[in-house]
Each structure stands twice: as C-alpha cells, then as structure tokens.
Amino acid sequence: MIAKKTSKNQLTLPKKIADCFPGVEYFDVRADESRITLVPVRAGQIEQVQARLKKLGVSKRDVKDAVAWARRSGRSSAR
Picture: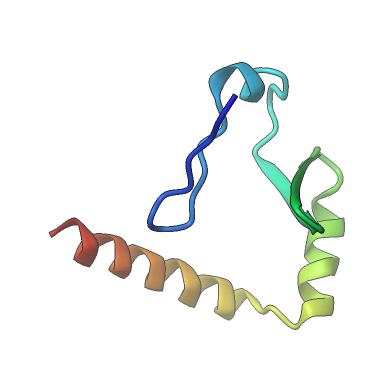
C-alpha cells in the first residue's frame, strides 16, 4: 500500500492498516535510516508521551501555538 505526503506534511493511513489498530488515536513516529516507523500509543502510554515531550522541552503553550499556527496555515493555503 502507498500513502502520499501532502503539502502540509501529513499522511493518511490506508483504511486496511488503520483498521488493524482499533481505538488507537496516537502513534509514536520514529525515523530509522531510510524508514519511518509508527508505533501505536495505547491507553496508559500517554504518560510516556508526556514525559518525552517534557524531556524535549515542549510545553503545553508550544503545542497550543503549533496548533494555532497549523490552523492559520491551513486557511491561508486553501484560498
């Protein structure tokens, strides 16, 4: 199966693949040499994600600002 990267650097998982992970909303994304690996983050693992963000110095404000930026960018490119 093939997934295409959009101009906004987004990928949509093929339904057949996404159906293999019912209830999974988040994936840990890793780059290993020439491969991108998605690892499902299951309930209870969210603390690991939060710890990783903290280790990277990403604050709640950073996330809020990034979402606002992405939303502004999406509107302007749709025109």
